[in-house]
Length: 110
Image (tube, rainbow, N blue to C red; front, side, top):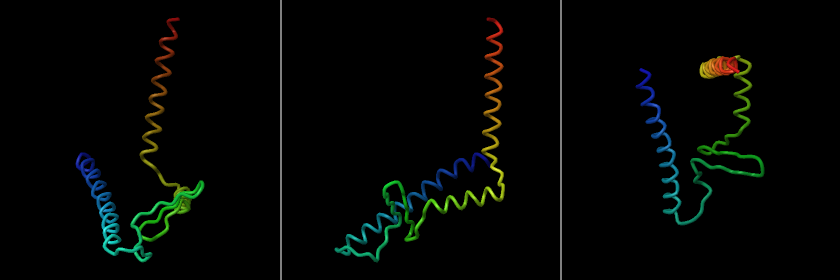
């Protein structure tokens, strides 16, 4: 099951980005067919950088960092468990302990 998921995830991501790029290309083609600039056709994905702030628009809806901040606060309130974070912390502790014991072992000869 795990191998299947590892194969499926990249394929799904490739198709997702292909669809987004296809939507952008279709939008550009529709604008070229129109022959003039119009505000009725929105870009599927649009990035705007103003000074130190970056804003994004996806399908005409504004997406900002405030959404991410709110979601982080909600997760902190729920005290959600992150399996990958705990696995990474456990691995880091093991590596640290192994490195310390190796250094102590080598240092005992001197």
